[in-house]
Image (tube, rainbow, N blue to C red; front, side, top):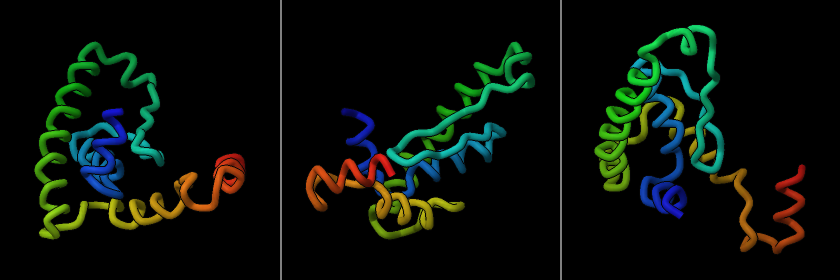
Amino acid sequence: NERRCQKKSWGAGAIYAVAHEMAQRGIVLSALNGFRVHYCVTSRSAGDPNFVEKFREALEASMVTMRENAQRVIRGEMSFPGDAGLYGTLEAAMEPEVSRGGVGKYVENFLF
């Protein structure tokens, strides 16, 4: 699963840094746990015939920056910008794993 591999190689907080980089380029994403983002299609974006291209360019530029920044974070040279450091720590604490307490605890955490 490429998403899981990217998450592990970039570290906690990376998805929030992706959202931060996109915001710097005028596209607001909501970062979700599990290395996912959400974009709400609005009348402004839906009515802009160039929006898909703007989104693609912003995403490509953000990913270039993220690849560079992630390596610096891994080497301990910097922290992710914006709220990524704080939320990355919270995400790690809130994301249940079967290895932490068995299947029952995993399902309980998932449902509640």
